[in-house]
Image (cartoon, rainbow, N blue to C red; front, side, top):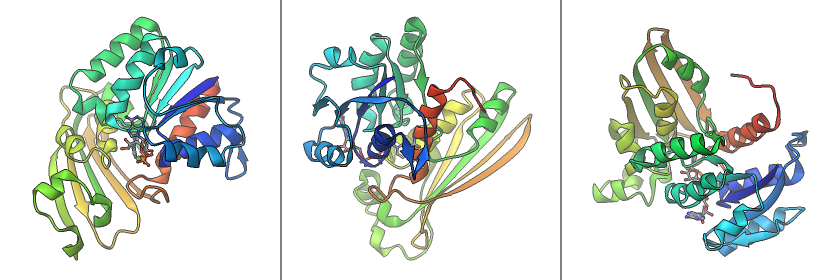
Length: 282
Ligand SMILES: NC(=O)c1ccc[n+]([C@@H]2O[C@H](COP(=O)([O-])OP(=O)(O)OC[C@H]3O[C@@H](n4cnc5c(N)ncnc54)[C@H](O)[C@@H]3O)[C@@H](O)[C@H]2O)c1
C-alpha cells in the first residue's frame, strides 16, 4: 500500500517512522507500506522529519497545489495536521477513490456538513474512512452499546495548564493559566462546543460522539487544568441499556507536542496494522 501523510508534527512523525522502518520500539509491524508523499505547511517540519527517515518520500509539498496528480501515486492518505486539512485533503482523496485516515476528528463535529459529505462520497466510491481510537480507550464498548441504546456519555479531560497556552477561548475569558495553583474547571459543555473551543485538545470528544452516533446521545465534556497533572488523562462514563461503562486513560504526553498523547500515534499505527491484516478484533 502506498501512503501519503499530511502533517509532519508529533503524530505524523511517529506514523512516518513506523512505515519507514516497519517497526516500533524494535517490534516488527509487517505493514509492508511505502511512504510516497509528505505535505506540511512548514518546510522545516518536513525537513526535520525527512532527516530521520531511511527512505525519503519522492514527493514533498507545502500546500495542496497539484494534489490531483499526487493522489494518483497513493492508495491511502493520512491526515494528522489540523481540522481545516481534513476537508482540504480528504474530500479530494475520497473523490479519487483513495482510502483515508482522520486524526483531527474534531473537524467532523465543527464543520457541520463534513461528516455527511465524507459518509456519502466514501459510500459512492466504495473506499474506507479510518478513525483511530486516538487518545482514548473503550470505543469498542461504546460502539457495541450504541447498537442498543446509550443514554448518557460524559468525558472529563485533565491536562497541565501549560497545555492550554495559546488557546483563544482561554485568552478571551482572561484566564491566567500560570496563576492556576489547583485543579480548575476551564470548560463544561457539549462535545460540539468543546471541539470548537479546544480544537487541539479534545478530539476524543468527537471520537466518542461518532462511536455512539445516536439521536439520544449528547456527549457532555468537562475540561480541567490541573497543575499536578503529569499525564493527559481522559475519563469516560457512559450509561445505556447495556449497563454502564467507566474508562480512564492516563496518557504520556508526546515529547514533540505535549497537547497530544503518545497513545494517539500508537492508535494510528495500530489502525495501519488493522488495514494490512485480514483479522479484525473489536
Ligand atoms: N484523534 C485524537 O485522539 C487526537 C489526539 C491528539 C491530536 N489530534 C489531532 O491530530 C492533529 C495532529 O496532531 P499533532 O500533535 O501531530 O500536531 P502537531 O502540531 O505536532 O503537528 C501538526 C502538523 O501539521 C501541520 N499543518 C497544520 N495545518 C496544516 C495544513 N492545513 N496543511 C498541511 N500541514 C498542516 C503543522 O505545520 C504541523 O507540522 C491535530 O489536529 C490534533 O488536534 C487528534
